[in-house]
Amino acid sequence: MARQLRAEQTRATIIEAAADLFDSHGYESTSLSEIVEHARVTKGALYFHFAAKEDLAHEIMEFQSRTLRRLAHEVEETGCSSLEALMRITFQLTRLAVDLPVARAGLRLASSGMAVRPPLPHPFTQLLDLASARFRGAAKEADIHPDTDVEAAAHALVSFLVGTRVTGRTLEPYARLPRRVAEMWRFLVRALVPVTRRPRYLSLAAQLERETRTV
View 1 (cartoon, rainbow, N blue to C red):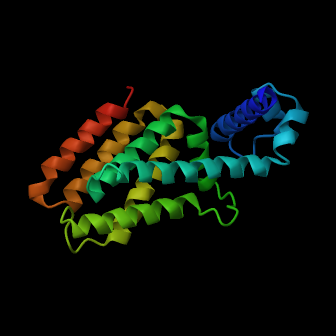
View 2: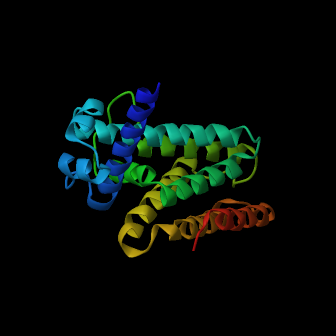
């Protein structure tokens, strides 16, 4: 049991080290030797868990996919509206991106054109599907205008989330991400939500920003 625990800890250490380097330097610019050095493990330990650098990248993208499914399930269990659920999921993803190199690296890998192994969905496709479903639910619940093009709204949301992370990597600290997501939601709420329902969701955006921001 102790040996198994050490092996799991070593695996987690390697994944986190790889994610940190993938996020800061990019996949192509990161070597296995650098990962070994950053993780402070032997090459033998790395190859025991991962046969190639691509396997590490796939594991990180698997983590991102599992995390999104888990967050969506947890929010759905609260019974909140579709629009509130989508807002909460995006802020929780943002909080993870601030705190965890693995969460940040998953998006960088996806935006770099890294191939995804079936049946794992591409992260952007997974986000688009989730956002489209929540916007359709919001339309049925009269929380957004009935003539809203939900596919276009979902695409705009995902593009904003991805673009904010990409530009923020060089322009400002990760801790500013919650503020940028709150700005996104203020735009979207004013564009999509009927006037009588806007105060609720503008207030929610401010609340979620306070709960997730650090600066």
